[in-house]
Image (cartoon, rainbow, N blue to C red):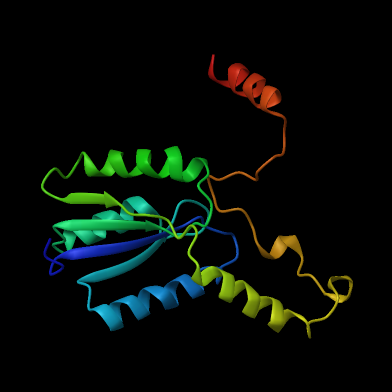
Length: 166
């Protein structure tokens, strides 16, 4: 496959904290600089954007003939098993001329062992969590049209959706 018109999308979870994705942006910039991809974009599933649909369409508008989506996730949870593939298929079906690939998530790599050890070593000098001054939650409002996650048991969730959708 020619990398000439291949766009890479790093897809993160999303956050209400405006700068939460800055390190993923740094990784994207490094990929573009070191490997010369046609496009390397960053987007999020929810909360603050940009979100996948508009990022994917940006790649297509700019001429990408192949889009590889790398889920920026460590765990193989529901987002990887269902949510992300479903979201991607919805967009991919609108553009049959574009090859759309769901790449592997970050997952496990032996390099993580050394990285986690570095984080442990760096953490020894940090202050006790009891001494941290936390910002007020009001500083991070929920974006319009989105909701706060509410912890509930699976049977409570089923009952809630049954009442709302029947």
